[in-house]
Length: 86
Image 1 (cartoon, rainbow, N blue to C red):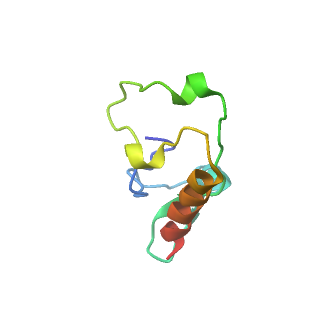
Image 2 (tube, rainbow, N blue to C red):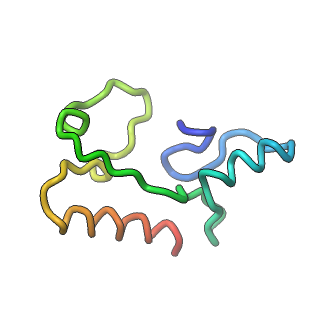
């Protein structure tokens, strides 16, 4: 969980202060479906980073993790992100 937003884009705590709202809006934007979607997507092209699986409790779906290789994989990742705004 990043910034109290789960892997489905649901906020898991009640944001109360202006500081908390500012911090959340720095990294996420609210979609029409009231989900938190990342404002930025970072792609790490270092194979050793993407070539291993961490033992996190709530890991992002493996379909969202791509090993760099083809432009179609990048286009696929962008398309999945665009679906968050639908």
